[in-house]
Amino acid sequence: MSIRGTNFLHKWISANVPETVGADIISVAELTQKLFADAKAIGISSTEIEEDTGSVYEAILDAIVHHDAGLAE
Image (tube, rainbow, N blue to C red; front, side, top):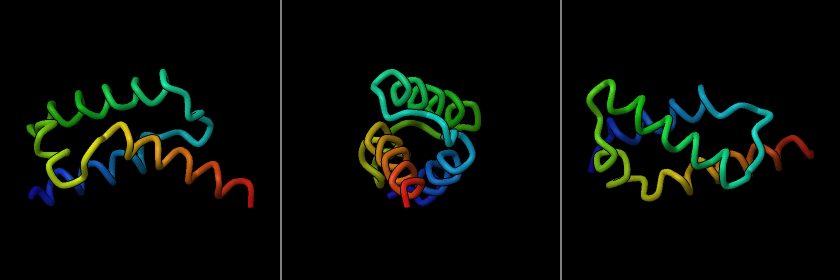
């Protein structure tokens, strides 16, 4: 279990998932690749992130969908 990986994921999503991004496959895939590149740059492996959080792709998609749902309120 990696708290460091989980914390990185949550902070990264907060700082890097733009409010205007749509929940399309290309946007989510590009954000996932960027997250892994940023993590690698500071010494965090994809395994370290995903071992506690599961799929990063799904976490980013979930963040986008829930953000859009919040805008509709």
